[in-house]
Image 1: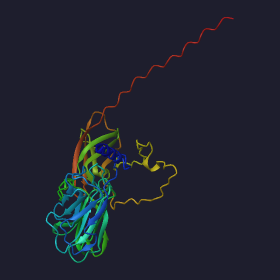
Image 2: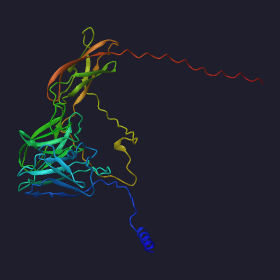
Image 3: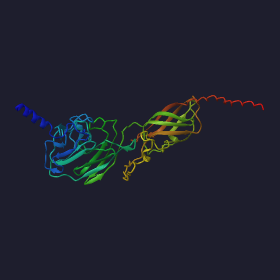
Image 4: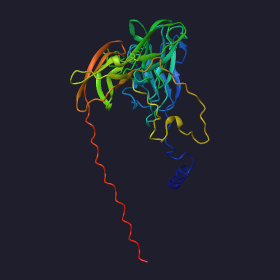
Amino acid sequence: MRRLIAVALLGFGCASPGMPPGGPPDVAAPQIVAIVPDSGSVGVKPKEVLFKFDEVVAERPPSVTTLGDLFLISPRDGVPSASWHRDAIGVKPARGWRANTPYTVIMLKGLADIRGNIRNTGASTFFSTGTAIPRTRIAGNVFDWVTGSPANGALVESFVVPDSIHAYVALADTTGAFVIEHVPPGRYTLRAYLDRNKNQAIDPSEPWDSVSVILSDSTRKDLVIFTHDTLPPRIREVRGLDSASLQVVFDKPVDPTQTLTATNFAVIGPDSARVPIASAGPPPKDTTAKINPAIGLPPQVRAPAAGRRDTTVVARPIMPRPVPITDVVIKLQRPLTPKLTYRVRALGIRGLLGYTGDSERAYTAPAPQPIPPAKPAAKSPAAPPPREQ
């Protein structure tokens, strides 16, 4: 009897209403529920800054090598140290917090939960180990001079020479915009570069730019980064556009303030005689609308979604310098002789750092394309004989 009663009670327990197992899959990225210490705190020196989330986060996010790569501490003092606490991440400088210093701790986008849902936004907080936080701001945009486009992901530093180790830092976003806040007033060197190998230093192949700023409350500066190469541009390739036009391609960008003319080039035949040049200059700009194969229409004329109209206007940042060129079109006064080799010279070509030089490249005029034989005209079918009456 006792056994029957126990089995009955167990059956009633299993039949009680409740949430079924499973449920909809979790597709939401982890959300921040708190940051400790509170943003704007003064006179604090925490063991680490804690970013707390609404769920367990991944200890090794797929977008970075280490957890510390997702954080910036401004001012910088080595690579940030990040520790995983299931639903929280603690961040601190590798060498500890400095006294009487305002700090900004930035979490970059890319943090994920254990199901692989990735945050596409970042977050930041600021505090001071001293008694005050400067209400200052350095803002601007970083441009890639060679491409004329925003330098997405460029590292921006503000430091007092020669101490570039403890620089106040920020990253340029997809539009090239950056903001460095809470920097003590003073004279600073503002520098931006593409830190491709993440060593917090400028390598010879990495583009960079720097300016001097005097900060009292807020200021704005744009930076135009490029590779600081002391070698002048040289001819990399000569292409034939037609029998009387050549395209000269340089291995480095040409200073856009230099006006290139026919005097900067020479085309010399095998008999050492010069071929007269009618003109030389940048190729014409391509103004044709580019087709996006995914949608079949140019981006600027893509039809809006039905019933929805986007009236927002996004101001595109404008680079303060003209875009350099790498190609020049030479138009000759007479056609080149097929199968002969000519020497194409570039004279006094100036690079982005102001260094000039000459270079030369051989070019063989191609043989004319053979004319295909004419196809015989198709014979019309013979008319049927007349029928007898």
